[in-house]
Length: 454
Image (cartoon, rainbow, N blue to C red; front, side, top):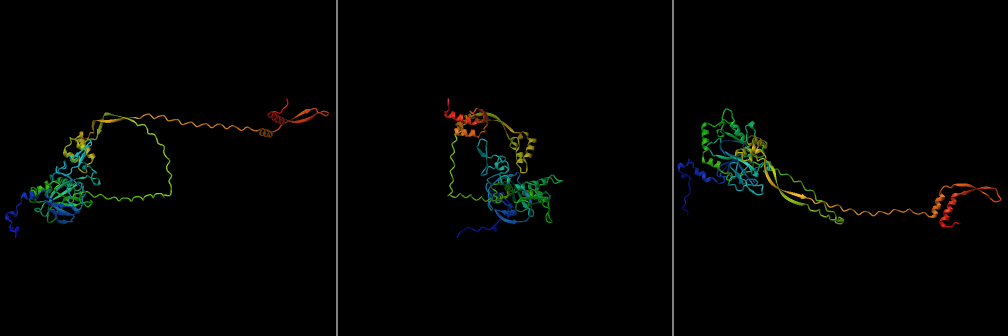
C-alpha cells in the first residue's frame, strides 16, 4: 500500500484563498488555452477557459466592458485552409503590423530583379499583403487586433480576450443604430460632444453581429443601458477597470504572440469561395468506319529552309523610367506606410497625400541601365528561277484544194456570156454565144494537165 496521502483542498491556508500571484500567470503562459477568450464561431458567443467551451449563447448581443486593447494592428497569415473544429497555427505573423515576427515559422519570400529571392523584411513588401492574393479579392495576410473584456454584469469576474479580424476592424457598419467597426467605434468615442474623448473602458460596450454579412462580423457600440445597469461606469467602477488593466493575466494576454494563441476559428473572417459548377464535356466524335478507306494525302514537296539571319549582340546604355516607389520610398515614415496599406484607402488617396507631403515619393525613378541589343541582318532573298517557256504550237497549214474542187467552185460562180459574130460557109452571118467561163475552165484544165497545142 502506498504511503502517499490524498490531496485535500480543505487544508488550504486561509491566506491563499484571496492571494493572486504573477507566477501563476507566468506558469500558464505559452500553453494552448492558457488564457480565457471569446470565440464567435458559427455566429455564437463561446466563452472558452483552458481550451474548453464553458458557456455558449445564441443571443443577438452581449454587453461587456473593454479592459485593454493592443496598441498596434497586427498581421496574421495562414497557409492552410480552415478545417472545422481544428486548431491552426499561423505560418507568419506580426505583432506590430510592420515587420514579421522573428518566431514566425514560415516567412513568405520576395523575388528580386536579379532572379534571386529572400524572406520578406517588412509587411509592406510581402506578396501576401497585395490585394487579390487572398480569397474574393482580399489579402492573404489578414489584420487582427486583440482586446480584453469582462462581462458588464461581473466587472470583478474573468477577463477574456477577443481577437478582432479585418472585417470587424474596418468598414462602415450601421452608424444610425450605433453599430460600428472597431475603428468606427474609436472615432465615435473620440468625438462625443462636450468631452475630450471618452476612454473605451469608461462605459458598457455592446457587441453584436452584422446581419448583412455572410460570415461572423462584429459590431461595436454603446450599450443603451437598462434598469439594472447604466451605460456609463461610476467613478469607482472605472477605477476598478483601470486597475484590472495592470493585472498580470491581462498583460500576458496583450503580450502573447499570435502563434501562441492557437485559434479554432482562424480563417472565419474570409468568406468561403463559391464553387463554380463544371460544364459537362462534349461527347467524343465517333471514329469513321474502318471499311472506308481514306486516301493518303499527297506528298508535299520539301521547302528549302530560308537562310538564317545573322545576329550581332552589343551593349547599349539607356535611360529607363520605373514606377514611383510611393509608400516604399525611404523618405516615407513607417506610420504613413501602415496608413497606405490600410483597407479602404485607395491608391488615388495615397498618391494625393504623398504628393503633398513627400513629393519625391511619387516621382518616377529614372536610372541608366545597360541592355543587350541584337542587330539582326537578314540576307537578301535569292532571285526567283525563271520558269521554262512553253514550246510554241506550229500554225495549222490550210488544205490545198483538188482540181475537181476548184472546178466545182468555179461552176458555182455566176456565168456571163457574150456574142461573137462568125462567118459560116455558105451561110449568113450568125451570132454565137460563148461561155467565157467554160473556156477559162478548159484552159486551166489544159494548163494543169499539160495538154495544149503550140
